[in-house]
Length: 209
Image 1 (cartoon, one colour):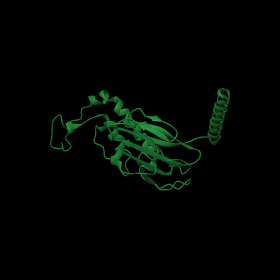
Image 2: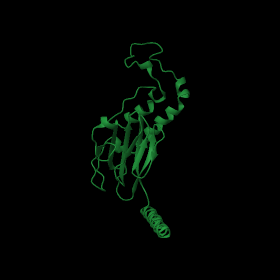
Image 3: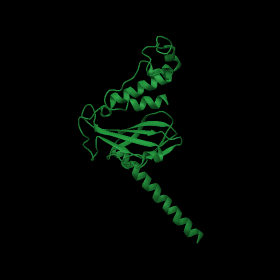
Image 4: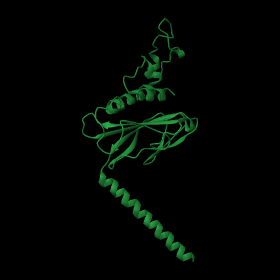
């Protein structure tokens, strides 16, 4: 749950507000108003840094993703490929928010130009707060791009345009630019396999009859 909170906070527009020690699991025992506590509640327990090293490294990774994709902070220029809003909201079906209470899921897509203004940039934040897993459809990307998981709070399973999130899991996907020729070769290969399978089924039917 700490990973989820850090991912959602660092996906926010504007300036994320973190308290010293959040990055390695300093909780103040749940006290959010400890300014007058001169004791263990408000002191920073530096031993937690080694104890919760994984959470610390996780937070560093999330910060680096935010830096690599400034569209998560603000959008100065719109994406040039396709007709995308700078921010769009999604349910388990892409482009259809529906009632988030039905599946306890919310997806937010950020689009725009990268920091060098050389390519379009796409980021999708998937938040499953349900006590069960959810299969989520990802929005389509322009030709030459594909989704990849940049970070997740739990192990997720991803296909081309869908992702399965376990219970109470947050994942961040980014649009990765790929060689168009590679995509075309993969498509042709799939078509050949489908044709081969179809011929095999026809031949099997003929033999049976």
